[in-house]
Length: 314
Image (cartoon, rainbow, N blue to C red):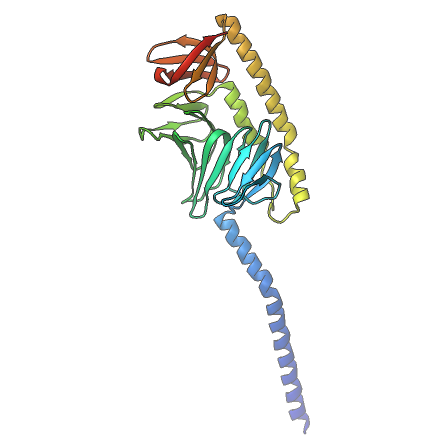
């Protein structure tokens, strides 16, 4: 073999080695590249996995076909799950970067759908749920239903309460369209306002107590990487919000006591109105007719007379 032929073979071997090396580098980088593409895709589409970030007290989650089990931090809430909270118990669920849902004490909430097709629908059959919704996307929709009302939003902070036959919706950011299921009529509820749904929709100012309840939405911030950090770290981050929540609860308790006492001082009595549904309102009745208006620590409530079972003065 002459010098030129040997040199040519050597160069060919070197080129082949470089090609193999480059191919191996490309193959080794491919998983990282695919992971990067997936991360970008998730970022664009918005993560919508509902993860429990805080659970306090007696909180149960019932999955379809199974019995209720205690809620745990890092648990993923799935379509059809029913969440129940006991007295002085609550749970916070972060839905990716889309929003945070808080289920307050003595409440029952069903996850009817969880953005599987762009819509999140929750069904409240008792108690109160607070929603902070920030990212829905162009086709996203978020609904909280009760037996008497539907509250739909695109980006806002609002609360929905249901007891007996009445629903109340309060708004502290953005706006909410509230629909009375019985009549099909709808009203827009804006910042600082509330709507009571009971035989129609009554708009009113947000009560001080309701404003404090809604402030809980801002007391809980978003936690990054909820699906990848350890449950221990997630629980630590979630519990870091408790001091702010406890402070709000103390303010609400003090306000309720002061308000009831001020009602008694002003009107010289406390009236107790009981509905056929079992719901009870305490305060001072200020008018009677086809409906009964009663001032309560949470605000003025108008109750259709045919819904009232009894009134008692203390």
